[in-house]
Length: 346
Image (cartoon, rainbow, N blue to C red; front, side):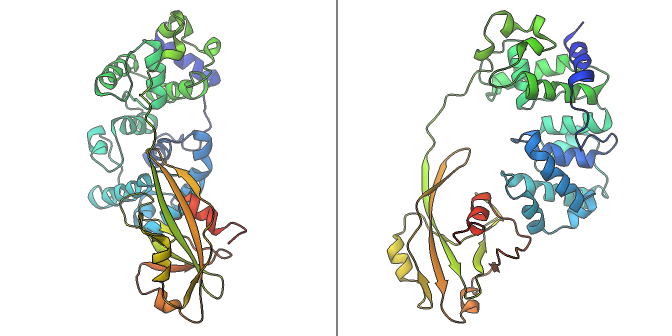
C-alpha cells in the first residue's frame, strides 16, 4: 500500500471531518480559513473564522466591507497583512471576476496573499482539483518520511519537497488527501514529541527507521532577535475616552488603530515638555515586551490627560478617534494595545 493510500485509510478514522470550513463546492470559506491558518493553529482559528463568516458570509459582502471592520474582527490573530490582502483579493474578484472565485491555480497565485500551496489547498479542498501542497505541516511530514536534508525554507530544499509532494499526491480523493496530510503533521508528526507509534506510514518512514526523527526537518540557524524600543502616549479626555491614531498601511500593525507613538530615539522628557499646555502627562509605566517574528519590541506607556474642553485641538492631525473602552467601536486594534486599553489600570 502506497503513502497516500495509508494516509487516506488513517484519515477516515482519525482525521478531522467537522471543521467549519469543510464545505465542498464553496471556495470562499476555504480561502478565508487557509489565509487564517497561515502561521496559526486550527484551535485558534476556529472562533475567529466563525465570527468572520457570520459578519461576511460571502465574498461580495467582504469586498464591500470597511477595512476597519475587517481588522477589528482580526484583532488578536496577528499577521495583519493577511487581513489586508484578504480584503484586496475580495475586491479584485468582485471587480474583475464578477464575484466568481477563480478556479485556476495560476490565477489564484496572482492574487494578493495567495501562494502556490494556499492556492492548491483551496482548490483541492473545495473543488476536488489535484494539486500538491506544502505548508509547514506537510514540509515536516515529507522531510521526515524521506529524510530530506537542509532547512525547508531554503530554495533548494523547498524545491525538493515540492517534487516529493507532487509525487505522493494521488490523482483522486484530493480533498481528503490534502486534509489528511495536514492533519498528520498537526496531530501526529508534530514538531516536538511526535507520536510515531500512531503514524500510519511509520513502517516506511526513513527518519524513524534510522532513529533520526528529531533531526528532521533541519532547523534554521537561530539568530538573536534584535530589540527595538518605543513609547506610547495614553491620552484621556475628561469623559474617559482614549485618543487613538491610525497607523500607516505598511509596517507593523499596518492600518490598525494605536496609541500615539513617540518616535524611537527621541528624548521622552523633551517630547513631553513640547506637548500643548492643556495636556498633562504622568509617570511612564514599566517596560513591556511584545515579540514579533523578527524582533522584540520593548515599550513604555506614558499616561496623560487633556485639561478642559480641548478635544478638537488634539484631533487636528487626522486620522484619529476618541475611543471609549466601555463602549468600544469596531476598530482594528493590535493585541498589546487592546490589552492596554481594556486593562483595569487605564
